[in-house]
Amino acid sequence: MGVQLKRVSGYEYAGPCPWCGGTDRFHVWRDKGNFWCRPGPGHCGRDGFVDQLTGEKMTPEERHRLAIESRLAAVERKQREHEQRLSALEQMHRKMYLADAYHQNVNDTDNGALAYWASEGIIPETVERFKLGYCSRCPTDHQHRPSYTIPVIIAGKLYNIRHRIKNADNGDKYRPEMAGLPSVLFNADELYNDYESLIILEGEKKSIVVSQSGFCNNVAIMGKSGFNAAWRVKFERFKRVYVALDPDALDQAAEIARLFGDRGRVVILPEKIDDMIVRYGADWRDIEHLLAQGKRV
Image (cartoon, rainbow, N blue to C red; front, side):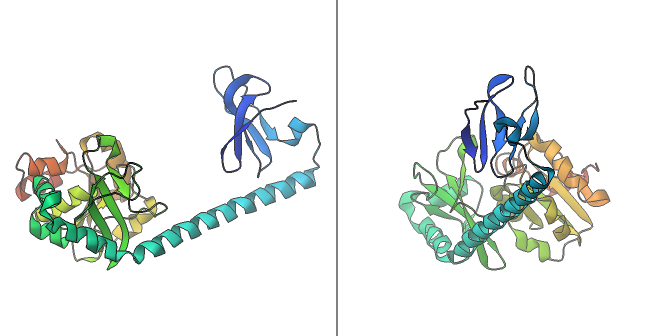
């Protein structure tokens, strides 16, 4: 039975199903030795081992051995990925000089960086506190556009530098300093301060603006789906955890709040919280009121 496949990723190949046709519904995993036709209208949903395609017969012992080998291969892949992430992170730890250099650039009046941060409602003292900066050519943007930089520093170590691309479209704003870095919480040092409650926000800039407004007890995730469930242990000491994501992310906010059981609250915002503060003049009393209205899920 002839099957023409193209590699789609790693050990995975896809193409037309030999039984029901189509274009890319039929998948074969070379390392696992199995195949699957993704089910759907007009598709057969068959699955099995590759020997059924080639006509070669495998004994139960051979299939058992192949299953073990595929599991070992999966473990090895995960280990390689972990080592690659660790290597990238170790490199990042050694690049604090970059965060400092980008931060120094805000003093150059020609690039307008300080004026940009001011337009976002961020005062010079806050620019200094968070080491906000400017980069003339973002290293991971294929167009090498200029960017405004936000270093992610935890316990004195640099974990990332987030580049906010200048004049980018809404869905194309952010780039990391380098690829392969693990996701971490922004402003994570606040996890270890003596607060009764903590706020989870969406985006580093919101964390900065909210901190400046008097609510330093916050951390931020990188995007509405950026919370890792394994992080919930970091919040065990807080009596209340408020999840205040953007207005279009209530479902994701509820998912996060559920991780904290009775301590979790979803905060329903009428606008993005930084816009509320910078554009519409909300102050600490307005934020306190919204937190007090937080909903259990």
